Image (tube, rainbow, N blue to C red; front, side, top):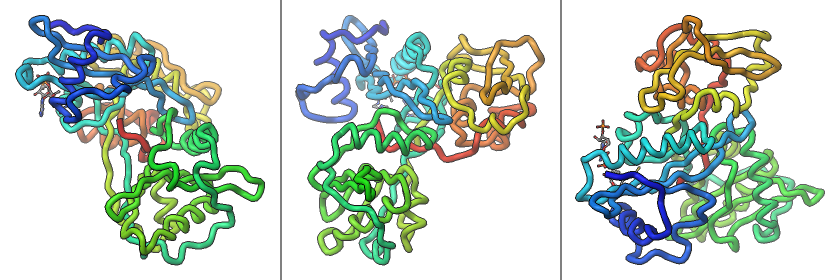
Length: 376
Ligand SMILES: CC(C)(COP(=O)(O)OP(=O)(O)OC[C@H]1O[C@@H](n2cnc3c(N)ncnc32)[C@H](O)[C@@H]1OP(=O)(O)O)[C@@H](O)C(=O)NCCC(=O)NCCS
């Protein structure tokens, strides 16, 4: 088996591999496979024919208020006749090396086959959260003072800037995001000076509103947008919202609705680079010189296996290789949940993925539920 970069001559064959796994029309649309600048593809070839495919989307994810380059693994597919022979494993190994070489210290993915990725260092580290609400839930929402406008009154750049103002405070959110849905149905809210403070982007189908984006920069914006959604009562039965901050909505509405979560998995591909790239807000409250020595155990990414000294200096964390005796040992699978703040080390210890004194590691990361609005 050969694993190699995707070439233009592979586009049709790779579409068919992808289609056999995930469905779709027999021939690709004009946008397939997308802008080559936004991803790197790998093909597995056996007997001279492509039999497997994977792509790494070039993305960025907010952690600690900074954008960390992240490789989003997607479209992982192997032809039925070639399954069970290590093809996907080979593709994922190639992707790991490529992400390290391309300066992506993190990798995230959504999966229906967790075992394939967990065995290679990815672990559940955040969620896409949805809330489903009946129309009665919107009764009695306090009136927001902002003005509602059609979504189309704002430019894409204005909507993206609004999203980014919210996303930069929320660990896990993607830096690149385009509102989706029917632009004619969406709404925007502006303050008394006409400044955009939030928007909803949505679709309507089968008596339901599907809200892809609910972006509200403050309580007035959230209340105004919720009232706008409530105004659909009588025309739709339900609203399904994909939420960056579910508590903002549940604290404004009398009914918390039914929440569902879709997990995403994270892997640290290059530990020193991941430490250097993120922000460390909690470090500002730690004494200068606070330090710990961490051993990383990672058979699938041997380039960063070893011992590092993490030191708090000037409100951030510095990472250098060290010969000191480690205070704490982290298995590759523990890195994503620790780095994202999704799982405290007390819990990681009980899974056997963390041993030793992890008190400084806990102090460095604020425990949270990392989120995304996008699935990919
Ligand atoms: C999932 C898929 C990519 C696996 O490809 P493959 O070439 O058969 O996988 P490999 O032989 O390389 O197996 C790699 C590992 O994943 C595990 N694995 C593979 N398919 C699995 C499945 N369906 N359920 C659980 N584990 C699975 C294997 O046991 C193996 O584990 P190991 O490393 O501990 O030995 C392939 O079955 C496929 O294309 N399925 C349809 C599309 C799909 O589900 N894609 C994944 C979306 S995230």
